[in-house]
Image 1 (cartoon, rainbow, N blue to C red):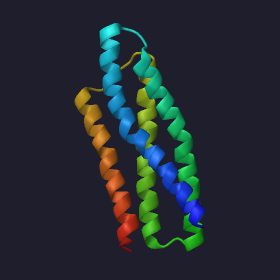
Image 2: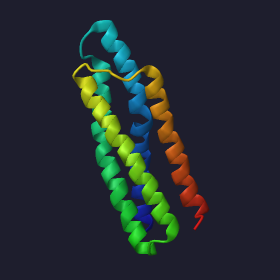
Image 3: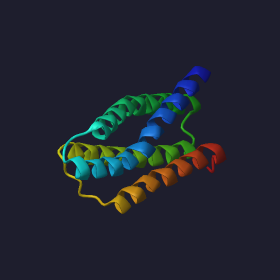
Length: 136
C-alpha cells in the first residue's frame, strides 16, 4: 500500500502545480494576447500544462479512492473527498477559461483570476488539514 501512497502524492503534487499555475498563466496569456493580438507561446504552454495535469488528477483520484477503500472510509475521508470534488470543479472551471482563452476570449479580469487562484490554495489547505488532523 505504501507504493500507492507514493503514486498518490506524486500525482497530487503535479496536479496541484497546474491548479496553482494555470490561473496565473492566464493572466500573463491575456496580457500577451493584448500585446501581440494572436496566440503566442504562453497560450501553448498553458494548454499543455492543463492537459498534462488532467491525467495526473485522474491518477490522484484513483489512488486516493484505492486508499479510501483500503482503510474503510472513515469520516475524515468523506470530508477530504468532498473538498477534492470541489477542487476538481475549480479545475474544470479553469479548463473552461483555458478553452475560451484559446479562442481569444478573456472575460475575466486580472483581479478575478488572482482571487480564483487563491481559492485553490484555501481548498488545498483544507484538504491537508483534513488528512493530517483527521477531525472525525
